[in-house]
Image 1: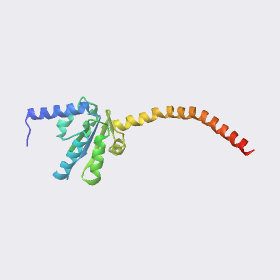
Image 2: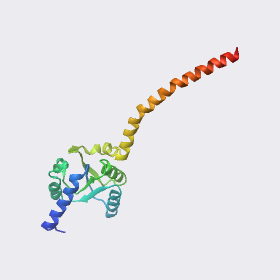
Image 3: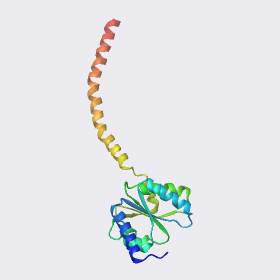
Length: 175
């Protein structure tokens, strides 16, 4: 189905708006996939806050121009589905990585984060990135550790005194 100029402009504007606010992007070739598999992928993407769209490559190149994902322009060839992480940087990578396990037809072609194009093999590393909540909890754990250690150290002084007095008492009782 051919798109008229207004529809093309609307698609470019929509994808450009998403790309401008996204944390990371993944482009994967979906050649040979069934409609049912793509529907499952779209549902999974929606559940994880990932914008997923099949766009003509010429429109995708125009949409990512002027965004952090401009580095992807040269690699946009073939039938690609674009996935943009809206909430946390690793969301799209996790969705695509989990989907590729069951659907070998999908092949990751491009991975980009923060304006840098990464090799497709870095999908695994991007997928392992913690979510925002996980990162905050890790930071709080690191910040809390010195305080806990100080409290244990300060508590050890009276504890050692009590143990020493108890040993002296036991020695006097035994004598």
